[in-house]
Length: 279
Image (cartoon, rainbow, N blue to C red; front, side, top):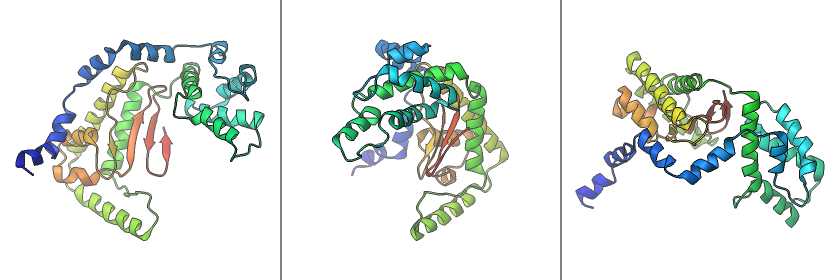
């Protein structure tokens, strides 16, 4: 392979690609698609109970008038929009098909109705319900509070004592966890408090930029900071800009972790390998 080809496939090329679009360029490119904008505006507008049920996608077993009382009840009971669609699905099955034959073609069609990948009408309808839930029950945090929480969580998990867990319960997995944790502890030594606070500030600004462009209407316009066994470009660049040494960036980030500020209710969702926290 030629030297130029090696450079193209190397980290320098990845960094250049990550810097290709500014958030404003991305926003202009997205908003230049009027159909996408119209779809989001239609999805996020306020709706009455009657309007929600008019949009409900009927199937052979469930009609609108049967689903309506269950949907209204769940809307009043749920403690977050994230539980709505699964609770509605469970209540509908409990009421209208309590003992299905799980191997039957009918049940496969039932599952496809709720979870199918191809033109899933129930999922599209559930998004309307989720937005209306947030309008009625309010947001969990202000935008700025949520972005500060996200930045604080990343700062805590990256720079404090944190076990590198990839969910592997085998002996090899245990050894990997120990070696990864030791490498993390070594890599974060000597990183100053000034660098840590600079990262916290940059991280908050990054999330704020995405949320302001998003504003609950136009979807995500920024790559979510994430770490698999090393940081993605968004997280790696934040650490680099904060002044973390290049030879430490790959080792100090928590494995299998991502943090999202939700566009609907500004909740902070911390996703790890084995669990998800909703702050």
